[in-house]
Length: 369
Image (tube, rainbow, N blue to C red; front, side, top):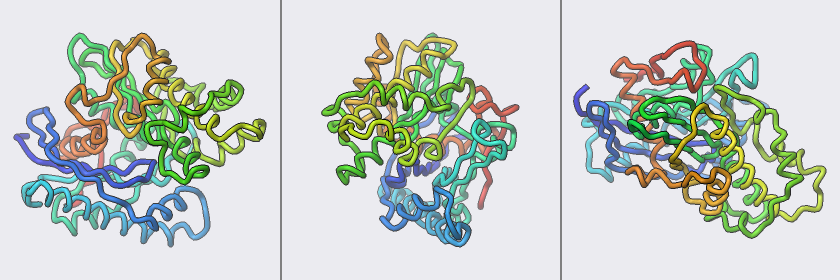
């Protein structure tokens, strides 16, 4: 396909807003042209958190939320295009990840499924732009985890001959990509990223996140608690695997803390940061090849305390952000779904069986014109 413009939309497990990115795709290359961070109203964030866990009257709550999120994703797109002074007619397609509200991969459940909200019909109707969405379920139908999908884009954007690179996305959940030269060797979710850190500081200090990891840095890692947290069954698994807040949430953390009733809240935060760093490092150290370079993207890229812990855990490998490779770490995931939209429209596979465990490569997503 010749040069074309795409919009990528992403709202992650942190539920902190919609990231929208305008991307130029040109014969395999991707260029970030403009970005926009679109807020989610407080009542929508509350509704997302509520529907993300089993409860009463789910279908009646889910339907309107799906439509409302579709409208918000459309608004995010139009705001991005207004900022970039690009008319909607100049965009070939929108790639929308949607908002994950439930993820039950094969490694967690025999009856696996994944569900993202943000009605693509509504997005296409409001924007007038062809929308590609529902990327995960085709991979899952082919026997895969449905996640993570970003490693395939990481390979396209960051792989270079003769260099072993690890790309680590630290969002609510952390995922890793291992590139051996131009080959995508493996990828998986390593476990919690920011999700436990965010929820713990929200409970105790009423902040949405731990800015620069300052609160965690003020605490002391508690070895007994760290060992307890590392006992989660997810950390014993190998091969393709994915996780989410269904596994790592405040209810689970509270259960683990029952044997540690007197810990200071800051010490718990420090221990949670150490858990994120060590589980990322262990996943990389168990990989078939060792990375000589490590680059972080996602919100965790701005948590200097977390990056220091990761660098210590993965020594002697130096930890940098994807800014060193020319892409702002805030926008890698949104770019992923712009790239995936191009793949879908061009009839090309978007998944990586080495990462998701699918039986074969598949064209991902549905097309809404």
